[in-house]
Image (cartoon, rainbow, N blue to C red):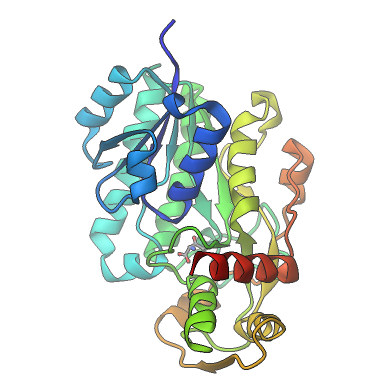
Length: 316
Ligand code: AKB
């Protein structure tokens, strides 16, 4: 029988780079097909199957799905919150049409399972900010948040009307040392580590007391593969699940970094990303994901900071 393959679209991004590595380790190099429109790392391109793909090119996507006998798709191609505010129409097009291209492949029976990431950006200024529940007021005021909320509604619709097995998590800010984030509001929480180690100082584009939900990449990758491996009947939410790791402000993160780099200094110069951060939750209640498919984060602020610094130092 031909190998059934897992297809990662947007494999060159912050999550894709690490997800492809983990999927190849877990299921075998020949089982995973990675793709991106550009900028995938050497490790993604050279350590396994790789094809260039523009997520908006539905015909080529179909061709690759058939050629590689793809049965599962992880769709990670998207424009994030800060970039989307600069490129309103193209962000909407990429984030929505890319999703439709994949959902339609599942609706037509060509693939069995879809993973699509949502975000804490689906919440807005009228959402309760502390311990934000799974179901609550959702009035996002960013292009990215609007596209993610619309995407959630379409995922649930395709599940209910066409039986598509689609699974999703609302990612908080993601922190990792293996790949750079691009165009998000939570990116400061990665940049700060590299600047602290390289220069001993960092200028934050968010104000010192801006609390946001965050997660360490090993937890995010475990959750992403975990929700895809969970039995279908345990996935009761077909829009997207809240998922929490930790919550901190730039000031708290800087204090934790100072425990390892005592001379580290931070200054604050909030820019347009501050308004985006102010519209998002400070912390998330993920009890529904815990109950439905057994999700639980491992890392907290201090274990994440220790691991990040150790690994970035080793890589230097
Ligand atoms: C962003 O900051 O845009 C992303 C997200 C929270 O979805 N990291």
